[in-house]
Figure 1 (cartoon, helix red, strand yellow):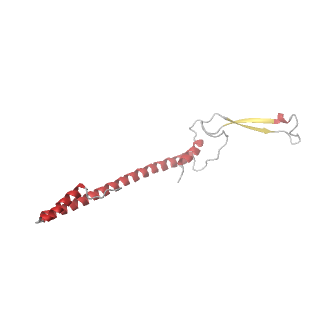
Figure 2: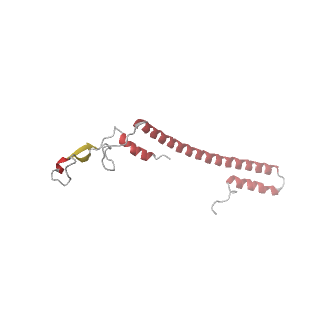
Amino acid sequence: MIDLDALKARLAEYDDARPRCQGKVARTINCAPDWLPSDDTIYSEYLITTYSPCCRPEGHADECRNSRLILGWPGFVTVSALITEVERLRAERHLDNVDLAQAYDFARNKGETLEREAVVAWLRAQVSQAVSDGDLDLDWAADAIERGEHRRKEGK
């Protein structure tokens, strides 16, 4: 799975719309001639320090630096659009999964209700055709099924 948060954090360094860090990166080099030994007193006079602006966005976590990897093809705008599209599709997929789960629950409950109604109707039809008192048990069973008492209690 693509880690979108990590991609967005790395991509933020390439966003020209964000304010840049005001820090400076110091680079010190020594331009002393090769024949001058490093313990010579004038060796330090050949030190040159340059300061470059930080290329990272304001509030970055790590140390300042004045270079970054080249983003290259497809570029900042395209990668940003791809990340946005992946986020939108993930949100849509999540909503579809929620809708599907609700549809399954509804269908299952509706199916149970229709089945119960059909059984109760059949039992009542048997009672109306009955001639003996022994068939009153069917009427009692139809009432119990209609109330849902025929179901086993889960968890016991």
